[in-house]
Image (cartoon, rainbow over all chains, first blue to last red; front, side, top):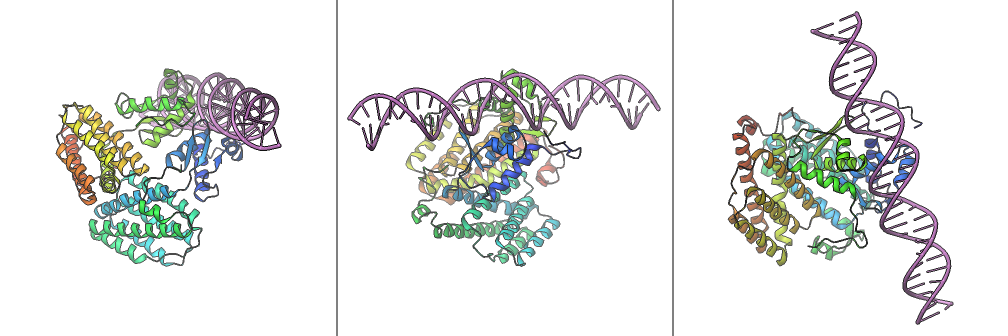
Amino acid sequence: MTVASPATTAHAPVSERIYLALRQEIMRCELAPGTTLDAAAIARRYEVSKTPVRDAMQKLAADGLVAILPRSGYRVAAITFQAVHEILDLRAAIGPHAARQAARHATAADVAELRQIVREYAAPLDVGAMQKVARRFHVAIAGCSRNKRVIALSESLFDELERLLRFAIDFSVKAGEHSDEHTALVDAIEAGDGERAAAIEAAHIKSSREFLIERLMTLGYLSESEIRIGSAARSAGE
Amino acid sequence: MTVASPATTAHAPVSERIYLALRQEIMRCELAPGTTLDAAAIARRYEVSKTPVRDAMQKLAADGLVAILPRSGYRVAAITFQAVHEILDLRAAIGPHAARQAARHATAADVAELRQIVREYAAPLDVGAMQKVARRFHVAIAGCSRNKRVIALSESLFDELERLLRFAIDFSVKAGEHSDEHTALVDAIEAGDGERAAAIEAAHIKSSREFLIERLMTLGYLSESEIRIGSAARSAGE
DNA sequence: ATTGCACGTTTGATACATCAGCGGTAAATA
DNA sequence: TATTTACCGCTGATGTATCAAACGTGCAAT
């Protein structure tokens, strides 16, 4: 109420602002997974009422970032092996598909943009920055598919993945060097070879999946038996 | 498959009721695509306040069934060729993947359930009922993947597809007979042959895609050029 | 005819009321 | 005295009523 509501706030829905702020906090693990969120406190903190907080919670729940316990509370989504597995599995489904479609639809400008992003891999980067570049690269490929749903889904998956990585990896890992793979992928897209593009993307996702699982294992987050079993028989979590 | 009531919680959230009711109306095209929705009127109609209506709108927006125009209104999502294309494309990405995973994870009970659903195809069905059975079949396969995200996504895609079919096909088409294909798919899943399962599912989706596109063309919803171009260069629509 | 202003309609936000679940505390029993 | 159970109060979500702001529309004036 103290906000004088400047005339410049033409198209700035308050709920969107809250949504983005919370989303960032959750993804950066500044709000720890499993934490129960107090809607009233958040409203006070951002100096707004509870309604936009409510809206933001709905959106975050749709993104899978918070769980709504009816009549009980909001909780930051827990990080479970199940979740990691599911996200990587979904990525394995849509990543290659997006690459295949990208090979069909990519324009010269698209290819140029992809090459630009690949070039940025060369610069010495910390893990956080590398994450960002990787996200841009894969989302750009999704963009080439010209399918808005695929794009939105890719973004969502990468967001969640980023959160998992921040939590589990703790930034202790050096920047991996697979820019060769990326160059090959762009080449395949430029050549219009959808199958090759899909295969490269599939291999890429597989390797990052194995990397991540190994990493989680060394951190004691899961045992070998869980990997063997896959995602079955996980009753707990969420 | 009884409802797993969460212990003491025997509650019916009002917003959920509104959500389900509106969702059904939208999917049955009783609310025509493109219609602007009056939140206050809906609130009066269901004898509730505007807040649960708001929540329901947020959920529907997350499902892609309504579009929220900030500071302007809610509108039932329009049906465009773009949307049909995107949904079928996404299905083409996750369907085969789900089938492949189903072959890895399906239990004997899963296979039995799938066979039961396939059997129901044999009975003489109207198009609406066939839709429902097809939905159950494909969602059941997604269920075998043990990936909750894949399951939710499959359900969402089928819901949207159902709406598109209701709108475009107008129930004038006879029940297609591809139960052989379905049987073959279940066989592959039972045998654990993921690649074969994925291939069958891919072919199945491709054929239904072609069927639907042809159907839309005969109804004058799109021209041949649009098919050639694919989804590119559609500036209009939502 | 076009532009500008004012009004009405509808969303967006706030403040307030209500209700269910959870935890603490106390009492009763073994 | 220790453990269990039942009751009560508190916290926080859900729903209602009200208010403010913004977009669209229509009329009027230039």
